[in-house]
Amino acid sequence: MRFANRPEAGRLLGQRLEYLRGQDVVVLGLPRGGVPVAAAVAEALDAPLDVLLVRKLGVPYQPELGMGAIGEDGVRVINQEVLRTTGVGPDDLAAVEERERRVLAERGARYRGATTPAPVAGRTAVVVDDGVATGSTARVACRVARARGAARIVLAVPVAPRDFTRRLGEDADDLVCLHTPWDFAAVGQFYTDFTQVEDEEVTGCLRRAAERRRHTAGAASGAREVTVTAGAVRLGGRLTVPDGATGIVVFAHGSGSSRHSPRNRFVAEGLHRAGLGTLLFDLLTDAEEADRGNVFDIALLAGRLLDATAWLREEPDAEGLAIGYFGASTGAAAALWAAADPAARPAAVVSRGGRPDLAGARLPEVTAPTLLIVGGADPMVLDLNRDAQARLRCENRLAVVPRATHLFEEPGTLERVTELACAWFTDHMAPAHV
Image (tube, rainbow, N blue to C red; front, side):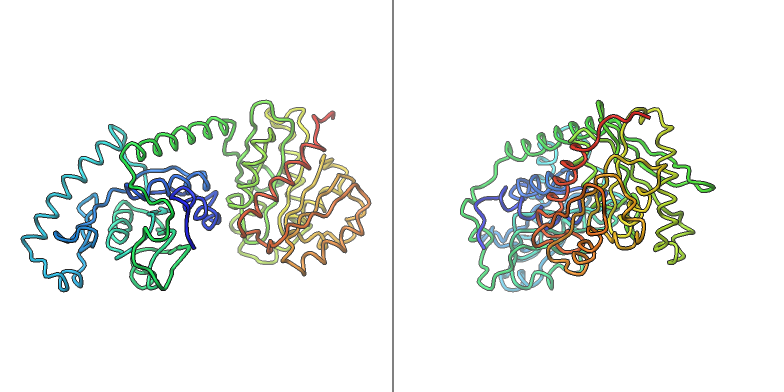
C-alpha cells in the first residue's frame, strides 16, 4: 500500500475510524507531519483538531533515529535499546533533550498563540501521526493524552512496522493502522509525496479545522437537550430543529443502544444538512433497560414512540411540521408498529438494518411511505425485509446497500444510508396540516 500524500492517508484513516463518529472525540495531530493526516481524520469524524506537542530525541550523529521522545507536561520516554546500540551517553542525551525542550515551547507558542489546548479530560483522544518507526514519539504522545485525563486513547497511523502492536499496545487503548508491511524501513517509503511539512501548513490546518467547527456549531444551533414525557416516565432526548426545517424525524434506536447511538447521530447530522429536524430519545429508562424483556417488547417500544410523537406535536418548535420515523434494528419494528396507529400519522418511515418482521400483523396497516434499507452482506435480515415488504400495502421500497453488514460499519455504507434517508424524507415530508 502506498499513499499519494498525507491528506489522502488521513482520508483513508478517517474511513477506518468512522465507528468513532458521533462520540465525544478530540483528534490530536503530532507536528509537523502528523497534522495534515489528523486534519483529514478530524474532518471525517466531524471532531475538533489540536496539536499534541512531542519532540523526538534523535541520536546526535543520526538524528532521524529516535533514542526517545519528550512531550508537554514533562512526559519523557527513553529507548534504552537504541542507547545501548548507539553508545549515546548521559551528557549527550541531556544536551539533545534540553535543545528539544526549547523547540517544544517555541512550537506551542507558534501553533496555538494565546489559545489554550483543546480539552481532553473524559473524552476519546485520537492520536494521529503520519506513521510510526521506533514508536518512541507515539508512546510519549499517548502518555501526554493520558496525563490530561483522556478516558480512551486511540493511536491511529497510516503505516507502521509489523510489530506495531507489541511496541505500543500498553500505551493506547486501541491501535489502528492501515498498513503494517514486512519490508518497513522508514515511514517515507510508503508515500509518493513525503515533502517536509512547514509550520505554516500546520497553523493552516488548525485554522481551517476551527472554522469548520464554528460553521458546524452554527448549523446545529437549534439543538437542545429535552425531557420527553411518555406516560408515567421521563426519557432523555435531544431535539434539533434547524432554521427553516420542513419536518422532524423521530429516531427509534435498536436494542442495546440509546439516543447517543453514533450511527443514528451520523444520519441525523445528514438530515440536518438537508433541512430536517430530528428527535433522538431513549426508548427506556435505565431501570427498564436492565430487564432484557423490555428491550424486545415491540408493543412497549412502539407505545413510547407514540407518546414521544404526541409530546413533540405540543412543542412550539415543531408546530406545523411533518413528523417522520427512522428506526434501526428492533427500533424499526417499533416505528412500523407505531406508524400503523391512526394517532401517529407519520409522513414517512425509514428502516435501517431493521427487523420489520417483529411488527407482525401490523405491517398491512401501515399507510406511511416506507423505505427499508438493508446491507447486501446481511443475508438473514435481507430475507426478513423481503418477506415484510410483501406484507406492506403502502408505498414502499427496499434499498440494498452493497457490501454492507448489519451495522453498516464498512467505509461509505453509512453515508449511503444517510443519502437514501434524506432523499426519502425530503420527497415525502411536507408541512403538516392537523
